[in-house]
Length: 282
Length: 202
Image 1 (cartoon, chains in turn brown, cyan):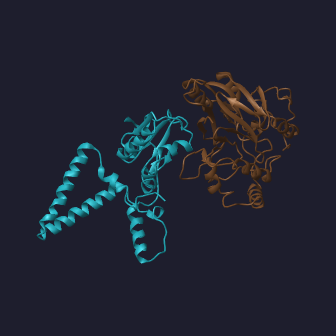
Image 2 (cartoon, one colour; image 1 turned 120 degrees about the vertical axis):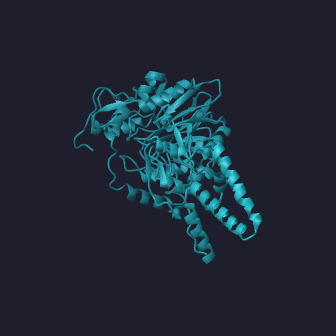
Image 3 (cartoon, helix red, strand yellow; image 1 turned 90 degrees about the horizontal axis):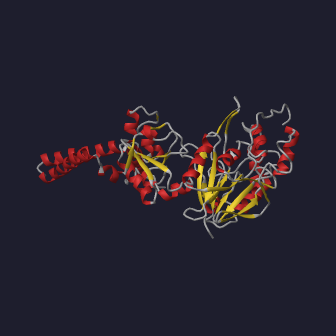
């Protein structure tokens, strides 16, 4: 099994990790970029590609060729930089089959227009559950890990899993499950699915909100998650997990960038000239 | 070994990983305001550090300590793992503060409570932990000054009391001070770092 090389880039405003996956030293220079971030100031409508530029410059310096621009899920906390990265580096923007369900859930809020077609044609490729694909010489597979949202997916690549928001680092626990279609029960099942992989499997998370005393990190092994994750260690049962997750999610505020994020992310990162601000529709 | 000043370190934390390798007590007393990682030198495992942050061997890593010598040891750990863009922040936090870099100060200087574990296993252990707590609350250079000063005073008193053998200690310490001043390197701090009250290993 060819083990992937993974370089992480942390974006501090949204606490997001963007990954480039490739095989270092291999003659096949193709790579994938996962969960890129375009900064957006909600007050002024100003966008900023500085974080994505750092990623792009690194990719160029390494002499890599972007094959895929992937997302683990339709993010509600940040805008994707997929469109920007495709413009400057090339590559194909990919979405999962669950995109359709997300678009349906949000259509009554946003009344999507022709810029967000329901057939997914704004994306270059649609991946299906458990579908295997390749990133250069690496074997990858997309798995469905609903819970945080019904459309969350993770990418299993060699000995690594890029798990999106299905899990956080052990000292942070797991992501909230109170978005439309989210489910704490599904979240538990998805986490057990991820933890069924071998103990040395490296799990890379999408977000980190470092507590005082440490800087941002992104990786913990399956063994470490099993032993230390504050929400699942010690053989927590599904009932216990669900009860605590739902209690902690009660009354959580809407993420600051949710309205702009959902719109932009469902149209493959195209900004357009305007975003909609739905009134009393949430 | 490559050296930079704090001003030369890129502001964007996505382009620069800054690691402060001083003890917890030193970090509490004063540390950089800008985003950085605090990993005491005795617990720094370069390969593990990089794996948890998905860094590649080209990643720019900047190491900081009080004056600069522990940082070199820390930097070497990364160089030994194959990292090629490793830098020592010259003059450490002392120079950084003097150059106007924003720092955060806080915590009592003898707040060793954070460093010493809480135990309840008898008077002897209580006294040991109280000593560890107080001692660990001092920055390393001050611990060294206290220990060297105490040895010199004790040796001189014993020498005055006709035990002239003990004069050898002030002789050695004097020589060591000269070497430290001349070379800028301090072996004493490196050794003292391994003392149990300074150790941050669980």
